[in-house]
Picture 1 (cartoon, rainbow, N blue to C red):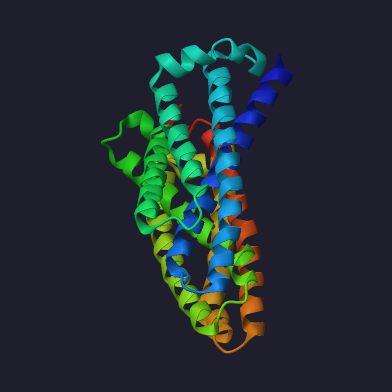
Picture 2: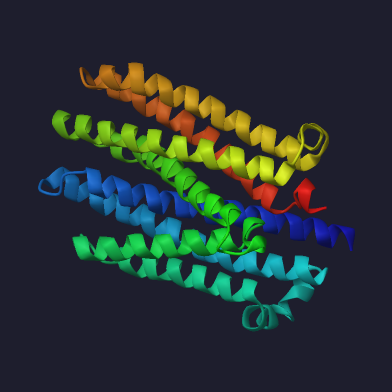
Length: 299
């Protein structure tokens, strides 16, 4: 039975991590499409490449959402993953958590369907953004903050925090691993990097504000921060985010000016963004682990 519950925990954390990673990519890709020119051959090729990765990200997120709901069923029922299969429909149809999960899953499926359309028009991109917003709001309601109600400050902070970390992680990943690998015109690259930098900075400010509030709301005291698994995991997440902020600061004040002058500068920025992506994915993994634990203030 212990091994069964270990499996449940692994599926719970792994599916939450994959789900948010897929969502982050979709958010970052949506932003990148707004910042790229749409009137040249290179941009059309990049748009096609983004669409392939979008479909992969949406597909992974949809599968992960299903596994996440199954793992939640096992956790709530106190049973193994195999036993949870028999209770899955009851969870989906008879609980608020199941209804919210289905709504979040539907939003992801809708995004997947829209990303099947090449060169989606602006109206379609607006619909994609609305679907991503539905997912973020619904997902926030399924965590610890949602337990206090959706018309509360903890829920609002969680929704903003999830959206901001998704924007930051997404634009960094999409830029470092996809966009900057293409040979865009210098003017287009400079404009893209400038918009990316401003957006990432705004996201970091939102993350810091909501993170401090939500962290203290759930931890409650310095003792809980230092002497609990939840507190230690939160400290690891904060440390990873802090290092990522440092790399982002380097890019903003040193890397981006150099990138505006040479292709070598662009390559350095791309490398820094890739390192930043790894750090942010570590923070997302820490966040996924936190969702599997009860905060100290809840016990």
